[in-house]
Image (cartoon, rainbow, N blue to C red; front, side, top):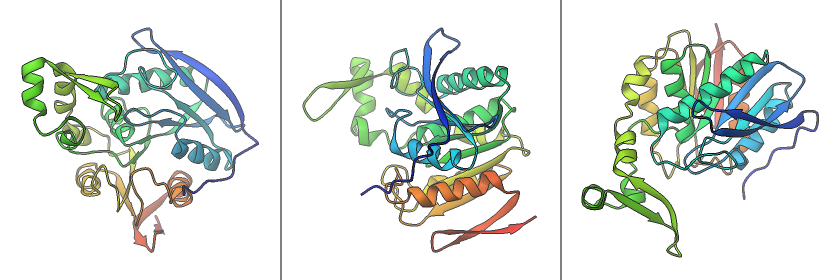
Length: 277
């Protein structure tokens, strides 16, 4: 059973609609905790702002007086647009639109946090724009040429070359989404190695990854740790990709990172060990 955190009744909620650079409406929820310090949450592949991981993180952050905005990328959830496979850099541009909007509203963007594909998006954002100095990557994939066979089958390249697309279907045979040759190439051409090298050393990056992640191997987290200049790594023992039974632990690690100027040293029985600067 997924661990649930208490809700933060103090924060007021409001629906916010923001236009991206393509004129598409991005829909999100602002949780105003009475502070202009804002953390922006970014969802993963075929997910949404309403996943339990974001609801629990929102509760934990707002309970500490940190305002939160969680939103749907274009083509996902309540937002306008067509779902596209790949689309990493375009989603980073969606995030750019959100950050510019709240900056104009005089919010201070304290951090951007992304889960799974969203982890890649926040890292890509930091590699291009250098205006957010705290980035949290939850279970992002480093090697984007991996993990494709599990969704599309071993012969995906042959099928794409033959038909120009692959329709991904659910168990009932209903088409969930289409992968085109262009969108597949978009994913394969997204270079996380180069992106990591382009992140400023002044930008603090935390990667959290579950040791029992069934979708993205924890080895990917090690690659981020090797390449990003100002990087902290936390491997959460026993956690899966969605942190289903580790919501409290996840929130604690995120809050510790946001609220301290401390250096991460390691883990001990699923607890973070820090030493002060």
